[in-house]
Image (cartoon, rainbow, N blue to C red; front, side, top):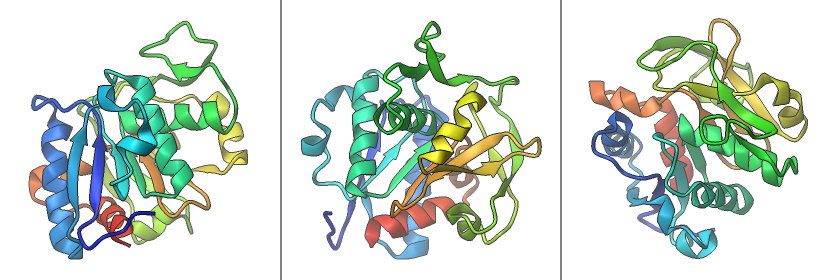
Length: 234
């Protein structure tokens, strides 16, 4: 895996200055860089530019699949996630990035060829991402983490209050199949609904339905973003 004195991070998504998360992510990374002393740099990579992920992302030491899906090129986003998963590069997927990490895993690890997203393919037979019972757009809530999990260690065993901007999440009908294959759901809201996952055995592969980057809008460095940056710099 590529490592350098100044590691570069790929931000996978279609940058839009009107998207709050897109404005927050550079601030979150800058705060994490200062907190960790890891001199990470980053590049926005539009999904429409990804036709050969290994070639396009070869110079990047980590991948963050960012919010604001549907993406212009869903296949490009999925290929970038697969590249990070298969090469052991640190991966973070927030909101839409988390949702698409589930789709990639379902298609390429669980071999559910028709795995899809209810927002973009509502008639698909295997919707691993479906509409939430209640919208989380503009909502905040407490998250607890499975004791002993990577996320639990990152948050020091504490409950974390997080913000959302989403209408879709993991379909509970597929939870057992994901977990049997090593994708563990380890973050939950107060109603025990899944809000985060991590891939067992991977150096760093985390997905969250919440948006940790939003802490930067209040000037706070977020522990998950710091942990991700540390992993990119290792």
